Amino acid sequence: MNSRERERLARVEQKVADMEPWLREIDDKLDRLIAAANMGQGAWWAALKLGGLLVLAAGAVAWLYDRVRP
Image (tube, rainbow, N blue to C red; front, side, top):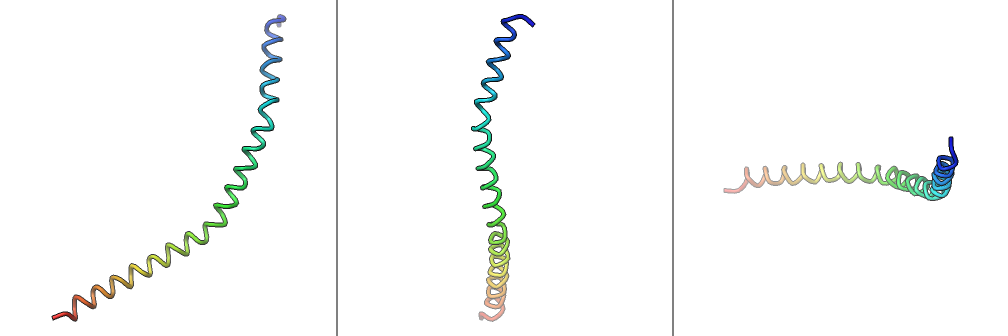
């Protein structure tokens, strides 16, 4: 390994070392996003179930209206 290769390797190692705090910050943000998504998951399923019940009720009312009207 000659001096130019050593210098290039040292520069790459320094760039990687400079990126570590940035990557750690991204990892922390990702952990917070995953936690928020997991908290909202229960609310999402509840909203879907409620929406399904509302569609079922609207369908029943429409069917009843169709049968009862003259």
